[in-house]
Length: 244
Ligand SMILES: C[S@@+](CC[C@H](N)C(=O)[O-])C[C@H]1O[C@@H](n2cnc3c(N)ncnc32)[C@H](O)[C@@H]1O
Image (cartoon, rainbow, N blue to C red; front, side, top):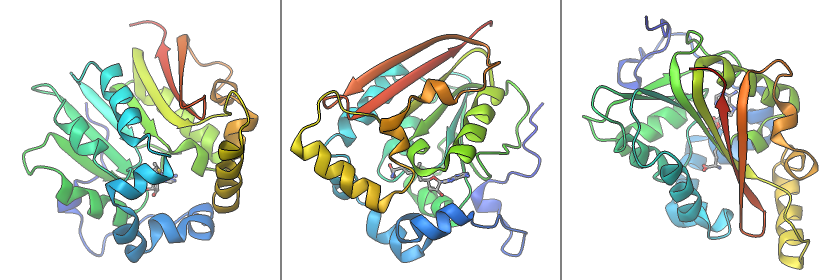
């Protein structure tokens, strides 16, 4: 049974329906990146996103799609929108009968994503908080979190991870792509770390700790696989749940 009772395809959102409040951490720290409509117009350029990821956008998207064997049978949830073309690319991998559900707390982000998708794409957009997903336990075969972790304060981040684990079925996977502590500190990485720290106050957690340590202690996990990219500055984590 689909438990997404108060999630609505963006095209169906009623203008005066109650909206989610913008969380303080987003409003205070990311108004310039995600919240203000002009910010969305400015930042959602493939070359700019690629620049912020130090030229690794294509490679990291490729790692996600390769990890899925370019095929998404069943149901997939992307937890929060991301700039660039990763969601349209994912949508083209959805197998017949499958669905890609994308959630984001900001309506402006969902509105920005909608025209990037084919009208026939098997994608449903939901305005939803990653810390309180309105889906039943085990609803999805897999979840993707693409550069969300470094933007959330620790308490929020842990709730998001717990929710991702809850909505994925036993035997399913959670894929997380984000920053990590580079293997060797070089001037370039130190400079970029400094820039990120100034702009993104929760990002330093990514080089001080490990995502696996932020998972709920009672999580039913079969394996965690970590891949590193660009001297370790980026990571892809694949968490496989036990059972299934
Ligand atoms: C995934 S990150 C973007 C990553 C990267 N900068 C990019 O564009 O590739 C930013 C998104 O996370 C969303 N977000 C942040 N906190 C959220 C929450 N609690 N629930 C749902 N979405 C959230 C923001 O609204 C924004 O659209």
